[in-house]
Image (tube, rainbow, N blue to C red):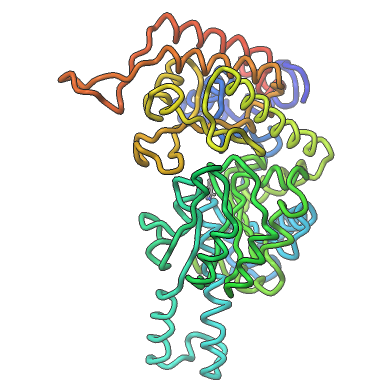
Length: 483
Ligand SMILES: *Cc1c(COP(=O)(O)O)cnc(C)c1O
């Protein structure tokens, strides 16, 4: 990226765009400008966030948005889709090459949507297709009412095994508040209480006994590696399809930090992801799969997805092209090195980390045992001090899923800004300073509160100043000057 200059191409592009928007609704232009300012000021440790490149951002703001393009590349239900075909084909091609996948589907609007596409692809492959074959028809419309009723009830009677929420799994892996939990009879696997790690032998026994249709691997808050070769072995033994949701760590797969047994793509039949987390693309989702599931996956729209977002697919193609460059591998390695440096800095200062460290892009601090705080109190105290994180449950969390006992911190965003190991140690010091100085608060009536915290302003102001000094040395969007 070029140095800050009011005359750089990037400055011109974004300023002109804001000028055009300002002519219609100035408050929107102001909010967009203010967001850049805010993002530049904050020390962002949210593990699921990042900063997309100017090229990726600009690819989204244009007339590709004006097209309806239901269907797939070359087979649309609308006329005039040749340019949408171009960008969707490029996004899929870059994804296939980058991840070594047989097939890529770039239409999902988000990670949740990608998971829904995947669940229904597996249901279509394993439940619907055999039912159609047994009835001797090719299309669901040709089933008798009785056969259709039977198939509909079979859809609702399938089992899923997914990682528990407090071990780091995701709501979309079969939990009741999400539609996946209403569709599937779900059981979850946790981690070994002694080590905090996935216990593959326990999982193997559980899968053999439960015989799920689908095993979902992948997480939002597990700081260690997952062995997908073993996961596939377990799935095969149980007669399950292995689905991996790599929403969080796709950037580490793209950047060749997670390879061999730790790369899900060669092992799982179907892999879902977001494109905006460690992968550093636009907000969106994607599905990768074997050719055997290709046709089912490509029915995602209109099966569960609204019409494709061609402008976002254009941005996915741009971001995936960036991720294929050698410097993305360097980025991914630095993300992991930084997470490790942060872990070491925190532990040296006495913090307890779930599993005692990290192998990926995130850490989970057990703030209850280290600092006597709930996650909610720690999150708020850190935010007062200019450090943006989020609270997260830890295994067997004594404070439940709302208040929690954990703080999740991730390095993808700050690594994009260029911060390194020395800065991570300084950040560990800031976090430790804040959490050590924070006390649990009380309610208005004086009762102990899991929500309130007490932190002297002197401390939060001082840390906020140091956090702001720290990031100011690493300009965000250095080529963009809106002043
Ligand atoms: C973030 C995340 C999702 C959801 O992604 P959205 O784009 O917010 O829908 C799904 N699965 C996992 C594991 C995630 O971390």
